Structures are given as structure tokens and as C-alpha cells.
Length: 561
Image 1 (cartoon, helix red, strand yellow):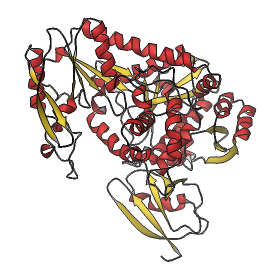
Image 2: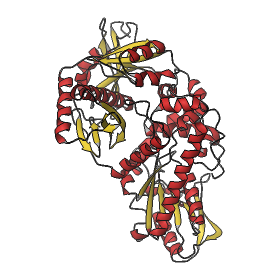
Image 3: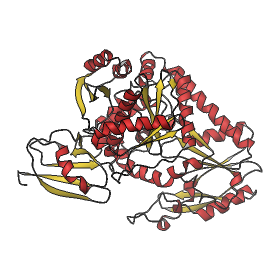
């Protein structure tokens, strides 16, 4: 390669290509990105060399031969955009309401749900307030203010935040297992974030605020459409699940990771473990009572990967037995069509997650016969041969008893479409994180499920943490197609997360994540998860977790799966 040029990789959802570009002395990645922005569908926001990410403001190594630019269509690029947008929102609140604080709580409808608090009280918001905040954000963007990054040792960062009156930030860093921490400056406001930032506010020009419930939803761009903001679809049932998670956190007196780490440090986590289990068990019993009250016969359970639907189904079946019913549990996976009849995806590969990979006609006829008191042959799917097998054993159901059906398509209206909807009770399992790192750094539910899957695959499926990471994008794509579009169709959402579980998962997966070498394609994602785990003390003693807990499905020792 000519020493006066660089190889630049353009990576978009539709294509990956390379360009030879003139090498620029003393250039930053932003200098190259500025000239090539027109080549991308989304906003260019990040750079990458090998398995290392770089903020665009970083200087390009003069000996570098190649690098990649990432836009908001890329998962890491989108994270940087939304994190930078949150920083702009936080500064706007600081300027508009100096005595209040912004809290970035959780994701909803592709955006970030935020509240504004004065002390412990949420501010009442209206369209006038929303417009004031949005206008201040627009001014910050228009000013194209630099977002400056400075590395501090952890003790220096703790002292710095104490000096500027940010005890919450100092507390978060108290247990951080790292040598350095990045502190970002935007105007006269300082903050720490779990992840990278845009070089300046001018990059974050596409956004919108929507009033929702008691707060605001911060919406960024459509990931692959530069300049087009994402539309908002209210998700009231999911929002109620988040509110319930917040109430449970308050009951346990744990607001953030610092509170959790203190309990772990003091050896007082056992009470939290027992209380969390009790809260979940009480909720499952309430669901069982509601099923009986409404005389439901078909209980459909759907959930994304690693939500604990198998354990939940068994626990619900147990509670229904306690309440006097004799439910029959059926897995949708047993009704796969023979492998040679599996529909193909856009790439011509078998799409095992398509609803048409299920023998819908046979499944519906069998469920209808069971509901009418008839016996049906038991069906299983032999994954080794790829064939459906009909056994001599038969299944039957007593009058008034329900069928519990679990599978990814449980909420899809095409499933059992000809059976009376009044007989159906739909349950969606979410994994809603009950705590965040602090007011401005949320823990994504997707990351919690990924960590669960890593631990489970390692313990019971003979698969490495590295393999789980490599499979995860495909898993997520299937969820977006087949599960998430239907979650608001559920009669009830159940949160299967545990306030302490990242600490328990850390002890299982951390060393495996560290062992992934820098040249491995899984290294970047492993490093991102490790960066999150550094904020948590490990929970080495899990003896207080009962062997019928949903969490045991992932940390091992379950007596129900």
C-alpha cells in the first residue's frame, strides 16, 4: 500500500467496501468522517481499528494502515449517538432547572425514558416544559460545543466529583475495579459515562422529546436514515413493568449499584435475595389467581431469549396446582415442521424462528381437541434427525383445566387464530433491570439477557462465552421480528429479573470474558460487558438463592429445568 494513503472501510447495512484515501498529517478520525459522510445512510459517529473503538475526536496514528468508520446503523455507533444525546439533555436540564436533576431511567419504544426530579419528587411536565427543554437542547446542538474527554485515576476522579458536589458520582466510583475513568466536559458541566461520546454536540442534530407518563422520551434518529427522527409508539404495559421494578427497588432500599455493592460488601445480601424471591413468587400467584378468575383455558407465554420462560412456566403450573387446577404444559418447539419443510430466510437459509416453522394447522387442531375433552397423541420433535415424531403416549385435559404453552410465538395472532380469544391469557416475560449505575448511566435489559445466556450456555449447553457473543446478533434479529412487535398484546407482563443478579453472573462469566484475545471478533463486545461488570462487586456465595428460583436457570442448580 502507498505510504501516503490509508485504507478506509465503509460499513453499512447494505454494503461493506473499502476506499484508498490520502493520508493527512495530524488528522483526527473526524477529519476523514467529515468528507465521507455522504457514503453512509446514518450519522457517522465512531471509528474502529481491528477490535478497538475510537472516538472521532481521537488523532489517527501516523503508522495506521486501515480503519473503519461506523454510523448510527451500527449498534456501537447508535449507542454513542444516544449517550451523547443524553448528555445534551442532562446539560439542558441543568441550565433550564438548575435545582433539578435529570434521570435517564430506561429504554422504551427505541428511545430513553427520562424524568426530572427535585429531591425525591418527580417534576410535573407539560408541553410547555417539554418545548423549553427541547429549545435549550437545540441551542446546545447549534453551538456545536466540544465534548471533551479526560482520563483520571479512580482516586482522582472520586476527589474531583466530591469537590464539585457530585457525591453520587463519587459513590459510584468507590467500588470501581479499574485503573482509570473517563470524565467528560460539556460547557461547564462534568459527568462520567459508561462508553464513548461524539466529538461535539453538532453531530447530534436529530432528536425529539415526547411526553409520556410522568416523564419524557428522548428519541434519536432512525438508525439508517440520517436526519429522520424515530417515531414514538407508547408502550403502556412495558412502562408499568418498569414502574413495578422501581417500586420493588424502593422496597429493598436499593436505588443504584452503589447501594447494592454496600450490601454485598457488608455481607447483607441474603435478605435482599429472599425478599426478591418472595416478591416474584407473590406476583406469579397473583397471575394464577387472575387466570382462574377469568376462567382462561389457553395460557400463552412468550419472551425473548434468556428471560426464564421455562422456569416461569413450571412455577406458574405449580401455583395453578396449588389453586386446584391440573394444567397441561406443552412446548411449541415439539410442533416444528420437518426440517426439509422449514421456510427459508432472505439469504436462502432455514429460518427456524419463523412462525411458519411451526405446524400451525396440526398445533391448532390438537389444542382444540384437548379443550373439548378429547385425547391427542403426544408429539415431540427430534432435533437430531430433524423430524416430527408421534408417540404412542396420549395427552388429555380435564374439564376446566388450562393448557400452558410456551414459545417465542406465543403472542403472535397467527397462532391458534381460529380458537376463541376469550379463552386465551397471554403473558410476556421481560427482563427489566431494577437498578442503574447512577442517574445518567442505565443498564440495558439486552445486556442483562446476554449475560444470562453466557452463564447458562457455559454451564448447561457446553458452549463458550465467546460462542454466545458471536450468536447474539442473530438472536436479537429474530427477537425483533418475532417477539417485540407483539409484546403490548399481552394481558400481563412479568419481570423475571433480580436486583442482585449481575453480581451473581459476574462471578460466573468474568474470567471467560477476560480470556477472549484481542484478535478475536468477540473481543470488542466482551470488553464492553467487562467494562460494565467492573462497577459490581462479585456475589460469590449464591447459597441464599433457592433451587426453584428462575435465576437458577442461568447460574446453575435449578430443580425445575
